[in-house]
Amino acid sequence: MYIKRRYSFWMVINWSKWPFIIGVIYSYLICTLSVLLEAKLSLPWGPLTVIGIAVAFYLGFKNNSSYERTWEARKIWGAIVNNSRTFGAAVLAFVQGENTKEIQQELIYRHIAWMTALRHQLRLPRTWEHQKNRVKLYAPSTSEDFHHKMESELKELISNNEVNYLKKKTNQATQILKIQSEKLQKYRDQGYFEDFRHMELHQLIKSFYEDQGKAERIKNFPFPRQYASVAFWITLIFSIFIPFGMNEIMDGKQDGLLWFAPFMSGLIIWVFFLMEKIGDYSENPFEGTYNDVPITNISRGIEIDLRQMLDEENTPPPTSDENGFLM
Image (cartoon, rainbow, N blue to C red; front, top):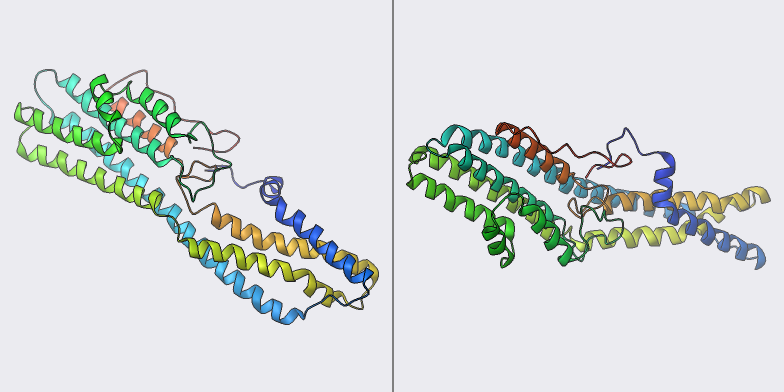
């Protein structure tokens, strides 16, 4: 996620320059052929305007739908923040008896381990996601990298027995919550809290399962490819005809204006492809690119809160942005 006030002009240009460059070159070729062949390679601008309006409306629909996916992902992690703080406060208030501090730390650390596993799982690549522009520090490119990095972080939070148990499982985050639920039952049986408080804690486990399922729904179900594909192809088709329409407008004008037409065509092509690209990069809020929901930063904030609830002094620092990008 970019956290400065706005992207600089040159950042936007660098990110989306190729449609403009290709569009200008293509338009100059059409213009040059028109001059060399002494043929009127043009199309009426009126019908092209109607097509352009239709394309713009479609791109607007796609961008709104993509934004909804990103905003829903942010709301899911907002719920995880609130429920995690509630869980930490409940553990500290409910668990009473011998070795209270050790049990409280175990339960809270296991919850941090759940967030760690979920964060890594959500950043695993899918075939429909962008494979380029991924931030390697937060988005491992292979399954081996994913398991190695996640395992090293989990070992600092849960026992080696639990880490070894999780190695055999496909969805580690789900299994961590299962272990957490079993541990809560164990401590209830040992009398560390009564039935009512046990049910309150279990309701929080349920809410974590729901939040995880909502995040996995966005991760594992892509933005429908028919909508995403049509947006690209109609933008491309419309862009192919733009130089012909521009030639029609410039027909009979001064030669200087004629050779200025390809630049204007390239600019129009760039605007439409920029809109298409913004929607394209907003479809998958957990893919590990620079426009992601910053789940690493959110997780670290929750971890700091929970560790400070335990009165730990050496808490990890908040994650910092890199050139304005926060992951």
